[in-house]
Image (cartoon, rainbow, N blue to C red; front, side, top):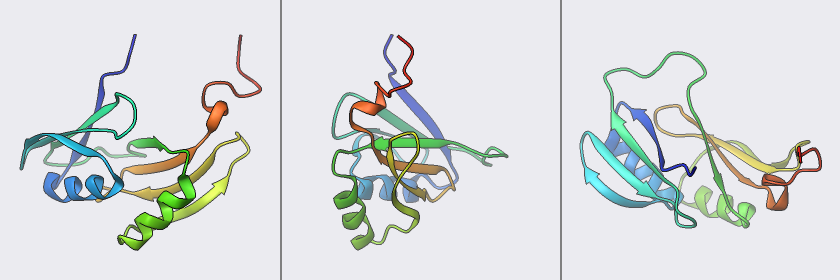
Length: 125
């Protein structure tokens, strides 16, 4: 099995599109103002954004984007006006993470995990 894509809701797909383009996602389907789809610059993962009348209630959605150059990426994004809730920080689960939110309040976690993404010391064999 392979994950094809994840779709997230948005009240303003055009505004969300600009945000994810700044993060580095490549727009591959443009059906503005109601739908867009992106491909991540590395790997085969895609995600889409669709227009909704209201956002889900509760904790919402968390999206993780991985980079081996997390700290440099965060510095570049800050220069482009992206605001972070948490700058890169080493976590007890052996990932380095930075946290922010997209225009619809979805949690975005930019991280670097290296081998620990798939092979942490506590992995089940």
